[in-house]
Each structure stands twice: as C-alpha cells, then as structure tokens.
Length: 161
Image 1: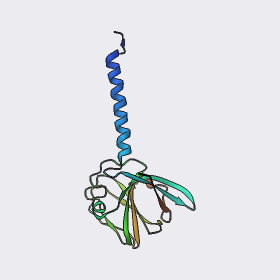
Image 2: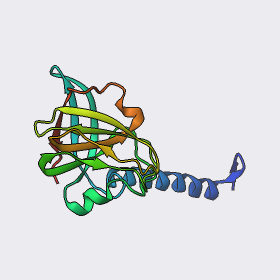
Image 3: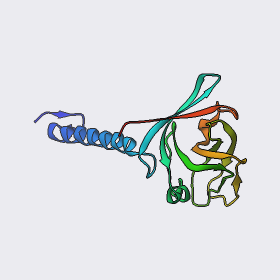
Image 4: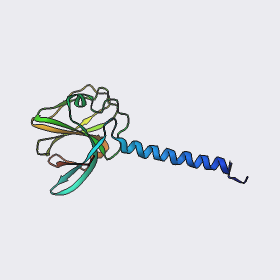
C-alpha cells in the first residue's frame, strides 16, 4: 500500500472524511441559529435609502426570550444578532449580568428608526436604559456597529420557514 506523506492511503481517506464531516458540522451549526435562537430573518440597516449594514437575526418575541436574551451565549458570529420585538413602544432596560460578550445594543422606535446605541460590557450589572418609545432592540457584536448611526432605519425581512 503506497503512503502519502506520513499517512497510508486508508488513513488519508479517513483523515479527509473527518475534515469533510467537521466542515459539514460547522456549516450546519451556523445554519442552525444564533445561540439558541433559529435564524428568522435578515435585518437591513439603511441611511437615506442606502444599505449600511445587514444582519442575520434570531428573534426574541416573548417575555421568556426577552429575559434570556444572549445570556450564556459565548459566541456571536459577525453579521448576526438578536432582535427583541416588543408588543408596545416604551422605555426598555437591559443588563449584561450573565452575558460574556461585548455587545452593541441598538434601540429603535416602532417605525424602525434607531434612537440610541449603547455598549454592553461582559457580565456587567449596570442597567442600560433606552429612550422612551422603543419597540425594537437589536444586540450585535460591538465591532459590527461602526457604520451604524442614530437616525438610521432598521427593516426586518423574514426568511421563509
């Protein structure tokens, strides 16, 4: 049996199959969701009709999901986020007590206009308060907020299930 490098042919075949399987698991995990939330849509941020950012998002739509947020989430991929959807527009309060990530927290009114952008520091118990009239909150990696400004508009495009 010929050897290739340090591997015999059967070992090389097993090694290649293991790599392919690992890549498939990684792709499947990325497609599976954002932390424990399934990907439900694409959130587009625009300014003067021009796209400034796009994020694949999971949705926090009920009280339990609002409380959980990204607590315990150890990895949030670039270009992804969690969109909190509330039934009404009012002041919102967040904290990062059990969240090991550095986040940007974007507060938006019922028309999707970004009213404030705040930083969330890992494990902080500091209360982050929004302005009044907030119906949507987007949590993303802090590094992904560079091109986004107060006044930009968020639009959610749901993906078919």
